[in-house]
Image (cartoon, rainbow, N blue to C red):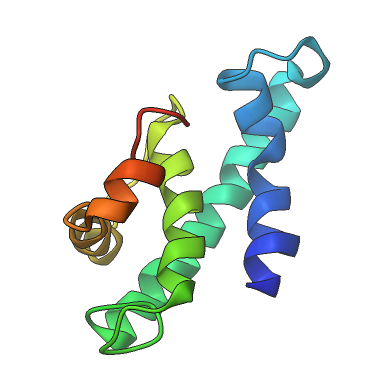
Amino acid sequence: MDWQATEFNTAWRHAFMGLVRKDPRFQDPVAIKESIAAWTHCVRIVEAQLQRTGAWVAGERFTLADIVLGLSVHRWKMTPFAHPEMPAVERWYMALNQRPAFMRHGNNGVA
């Protein structure tokens, strides 16, 4: 959770605030591009972890790590830019979306 709070969230801030929230303070195209690259790098780390663990971020069982990272990955998927294919993340994200609580609070139409 520390990594998600200190690195993952920091990576997406400029791209999300510029592309989704349309905040005028976050419209520098170079900064947006750098933010997307850093954000996607974080999702690649999640991809590698899921390739190692299989079902869930921490292993065979659903944990708090899946909730925390699932919210950040949802925001990544909902932000309008080209997303590279990440099959393990996609499989995991689809599994998260089978959980009623994630549908209510995570994939609820709000990026």
